[in-house]
Amino acid sequence: MLVSSVLLHFWGNPLVDDFFQSRWLPLFLDLVQKGRAAEAEAEFEKLLGGLHVKSAIAELLKLERGEEVDAVKLSDLFFGHYFRVVFIGSSLFALQQLSGINAVFYFSSTVFKGAGVPPDLANMCVGIANLSGSIIAMILMDKLGRRVLLLVSFSGMAASMSLQVTAASSFASESGALYLSVGGMLLCVLTFSLGAGPVPGLLLAEIFPSRIRAKAMAVCLAVHWVINFFVGLLFLRLLEQIGPQILYTIFATFCLIAVAFVKKNVVETKGKSLQEIEVALLAPE
Image (cartoon, rainbow, N blue to C red):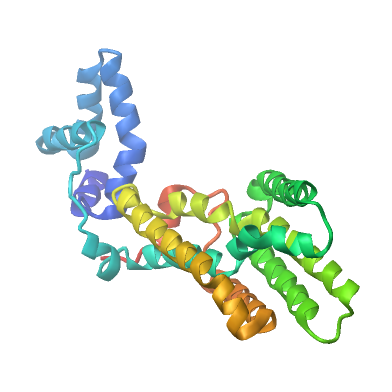
């Protein structure tokens, strides 16, 4: 009965609730679908005691139908128990866009045209770099971990932006500037697809508890697309007003900020259960 008492004491705690959703809901539904509802009730009675079987089963049935047991308010994501994980997710998507990757994607054809590369060949080179990075990320994701890929990716993007800054400086010859610019652009696409591109979406699904996942993902994606819009809208204007050297320096700075942010705030989720990740990220209520 000690286990029952502990579970009942923490009933309603997000970690315990998510444990029941991920561990007991599939088991309960499996028994019910096999016509063994009585056995399911007996197992719950052993775990929680006879007085609480009906309420526990009622909650699991609500979850199975997609109903919220305790609805999480949007304000809870910004000021409550879940603020840290929402802050991490939103910041990752914000830094992803402020790294300058979309400026690279949107205006790569202009850079390649200046280097005398035909548009079809330019698009092919960008596509190959993107695909190559994605395949490498797929292979290494569960070997090196999400955090390592993010660090390597943002560091590589900072290096690629440094090449763009050098290409825009007076130190590089005209031909050298073109090679640096094209090389920096391809390196940026490659390193982005290694981690900064694919990892945030995967990481968010792992760090968000199931009860807030839908709303939290909506907030993070809203941040993503708003910043994406403004980067695309303002890039050419800023390029004309402050010049490529300062603009690419700003992008490189955001990449370095992303490296520092990942080191400080992102936990490695490789090989960890959802419950272990939540314990590491969520402070007790």
